[in-house]
Length: 295
Image 1 (cartoon, helix red, strand yellow):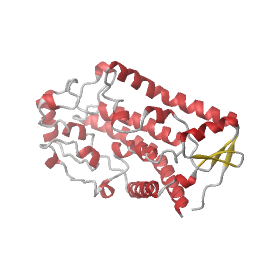
Image 2 (cartoon, helix red, strand yellow):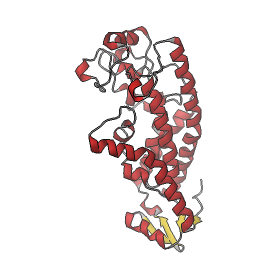
Image 3 (cartoon, rainbow, N blue to C red):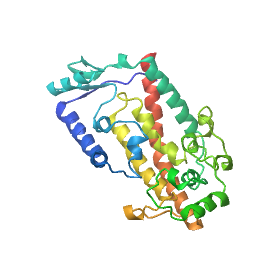
Image 4 (spheres, rainbow, N blue to C red):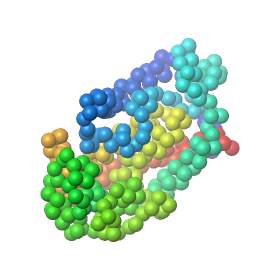
């Protein structure tokens, strides 16, 4: 793949994109920062900032990605960030700052994305990973202990024990309780992640956000934002299908312990798989393009 051609943006153009991106992301970052300042927690959305380690200020910050020359006197602001240089009458991301460390991240990300994209979506896990994370767990040790379990402790345990658990996503499986881990059909590890990742998995599709921001600032802000917003919507389903009662927060449960609930979950899961597909393709193309910077 050839290096990307340079695109020149007038200052009024890139300023508008910068404002639009910041406004789009502040819908999420400002409520999180306000909650954090009050010592409050949100069991759905805080995950997007605490599990995924991308600072709210960085999420809000617009960046053009490689091959874009920012015109106008205001472009010099980017020089203060580091990683940018003057070129062609403007300011451009310094492609020489794409180090071998960045390249290793791009290679491993591309390999995982390709392995995932090559498989058909598997839609028979029914979101039971969240149930397996509290199976036979003492109440004081439950992760969202301030939330009531919809079916109570015994009822939650019964659901896990009455169903087959089919989680292939390592970063979900590693949070299973000791009692639940042997019940899982698969025993994924970090080393075997590429062998198990599949495009129907909610967590694999949320992780597109991490794949994007880990290559910051070499990924356009709009692609990071697209992946973040998909992750936010998926997270809502993830928690609505969990054993927790979130009705006071305005979330109706997806009762996966019932046939109707499982069918509802599968429909939503399939929809997210379809929406993730073009984002995964964009990330793969972008990783492949970035790797030409080291050739």
